[in-house]
Length: 229
Ligand SMILES: *Cc1c(COP(=O)(O)O)cnc(C)c1O
Image 1 (spheres, protein in one colour):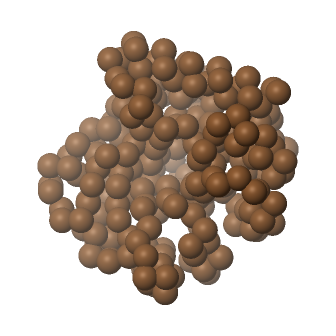
Image 2 (image 1 turned 90 degrees about the vertical axis):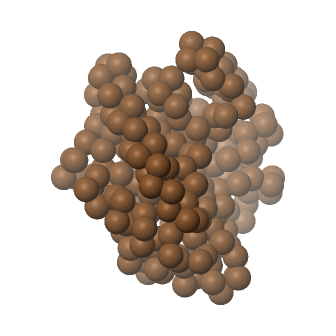
C-alpha cells in the first residue's frame, strides 16, 4: 500500500511541476529506482501501474529479474564495467550511464549479437565532481560523434547526476545547463542522434528537474524507502 500511495503522490507532484512549467505531463516518464530492493517490491509497484524500473548493480539486477513476473521495462542507470555488459544483453531497454567510448563499443558488440539496437543516454559529469562518473563537458561532443557511428546503439539524450545540495533550488542551474548542452548537441545535427530525453532529478529534486525539462526522472527512496547501500 505504501508503495502505491508513494507512486501516486510522485505522479501528482510531477503533474503539478508540469503545470507550473507549461509542460505536458505525458512528456515525463517516471523511472522507479529499485536497486537493492526485492522483487516483491517491484511486483507491488508494477501492480500499482509503474512500468519502468531503474537498476544500478548488475548482480543484484540478475538475482531478481526472474522473480519479476509483470511486463516491466528495465533501465540500467548505474556505473557499468565493460566486462559486465554481456549480462545485460537483451534485458534492458535503455542504458542511462554511457560515459566512454570503450563501453559503447562493448555495448555495440553485445547488441550486435542480438541484431538489435539499444537506446543509450550520454552521462555528463555536470558538476565536474571528481567522485562522479560521466564524461566531461569538453569531451561530450566528440564522444557523441564517435558513439553515433556505432550501429547497435542509438543516442537519445543526456543524463546527469548533479551535486547533492540540500536545497533543490540550488540544483536548478545544473539541470538547466544539461538542457542547454542537449540543445547545443541537437544543433550539431549529428546523424543518428536524437536529443529527446533528459534523464535528471531524483527523490529530493525531481520537481525542479521537471520544471527544467526532464523527460525521465529517476526516483528511488521516495517510492521504496531508504536503502542500506
Ligand atoms: C540511486 C539512484 C537514483 C535514485 O536516488 P533516490 O535519491 O533514492 O531517489 C537516481 N539515479 C541514480 C543514477 C542512482 O544511482
